[in-house]
Length: 286
Image 1 (cartoon, rainbow, N blue to C red):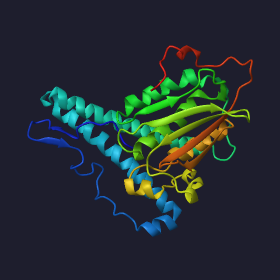
Image 2: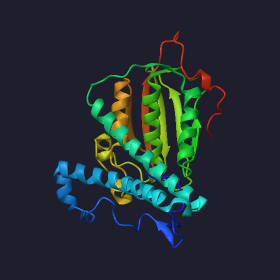
Image 3: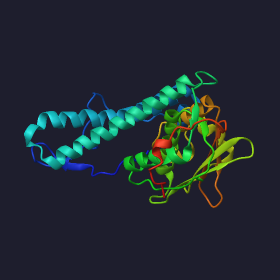
Image 4: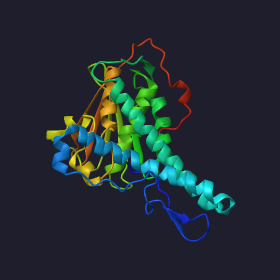
């Protein structure tokens, strides 16, 4: 996942050089684990899971551990800009850990038909802009262009779970799409009593043969392995949360290159009072 952009270096607490958390040794002891043989890791699923999780956990924990040591040991000798940089690095990696745990919990809680979520009417056109704005704030490299009809009927959804889905799909897009290329979100009603929400990017695209596997926990497509990031949990969590709301998600190649992630949610009853009306004052994302 592409993170909030910031300088990786600042002056150390004693003013002797640059603080570079990438160059420091692991704080928890021991040399870095050698990467297991790729074929063997894929053949033995538990080893694959351990490999991915250890990498995804170690990086943020290392930054948090070193950052807090710098703040504690440096005291008043740390300049204001360096202190802010370290705090932002710790905050960013703590958020990354939080989202990883949320994905793990979503996959564990909603496997199969377990733990259906309570749903209510939700006005996507009033609710979506706030969720998009929060993600753009978190990822400055993310650009979003949305098209949602003002008269779109309300859907049945849990707003917290749906926000989790949207965050994961936008994070997935910003990780692989060309920098500055906007992610498009298009919502339309269908003739089958659902609302379809499409997330469109211009990244490496989707191989039709592995499209359904993208939603398997810890599965990473070739493009993800090449990028060297992501636990393979975001899309798995999205599918399970949507199923718990009687929704669906699928991945398809996009004409002209890129990927289409298509979410469907059931339309609420016509006389239902939708949530999200309090967000009417938020301007649509552009």
